[in-house]
Image (cartoon, rainbow, N blue to C red):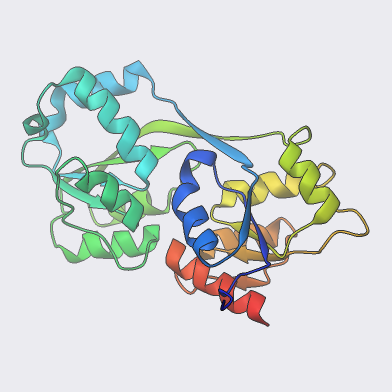
Length: 261
């Protein structure tokens, strides 16, 4: 029986549990032993006063922008709590970053009009500016608590009138008593994958709880995108390999390549 590319390799995932299924499946299909060690948790966080400013006059917006699938999920939970018909969105145009975000929108039978090939805030800003529709346009950007201001600033520079609505927050988890962390400390892994800056920061902040034994395998550290890479370097985590673009497919490909050496 022929071996798959990651047969005998142990790979650790650091994403929030609810975000791991696709990456876990891709790696397992290639033969990897996958350990899930979530260093962050994503939870709903939205203020009623913010919703009261946005939803009653929702029809004034020209663009609705999502930076993650979590934003789609939690925004529409609140939207459908207030409105009982998706047609209440009116003629608003939708933009997003990333395939997972686009799929979450498509699951609602809505169409994304603007999605850059590269899943970054700068790329989305470039795509939106290229539509020629931002001058005096009303834009609502749905975010979490850790989103950078890059996208907002770029849209405002293009003369858009931008509002921001936070609907979720990312919380760093304490893994000191996690049995998976104990397994990692004892035996290590071949690779640890970081798909977000918050997970990288949480990993660096829990160095004692994740310190490997002398006998443990020392893993390579992989990054999914430039922002995560930047955060890893700043936190003192060596970046042994990185995806060519910020996508799960590219991260898996980079992992296979790195572990084949």
